[in-house]
Image (cartoon, rainbow, N blue to C red; front, top):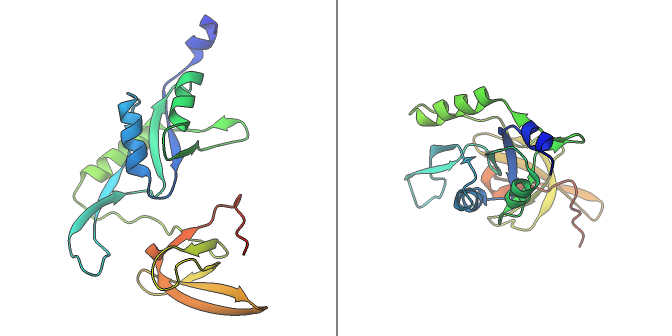
Length: 181
């Protein structure tokens, strides 16, 4: 590695995509590797029917932020962390998140105010039901229905049926994965 290459490396924040519900595992794994990481969490009321407690959940499900200069060694250490999927970017490589955005997020999660994030499902998303009576069913997200409820269309035998499930019981199927029977 040449000195010029090392001089060009600048530490910036990047978005790291994680496996579903692996945010904490990745956060801890990166911290053990002495890599600066930020997992913004908010307090929400538990959605389990048998509990009324307030719990901390990631602000952005499936994502956290990592500060790195993307030197090859550190880049590999980040993506080989258990539960890490990839650093978000485009065809030209990983995209840095402005420092100001991270500072704003830190202020938001430090406050006691209510935080609401945008909807995570878009009409036409391929989804799978991961909990509840319809677990394992795959279909297409159609719309939100009331508070925390979604409508999913399922095609079978050339016909459509729709089911209404809790939003938390549905996960998006990544585009690069095909589900076959």
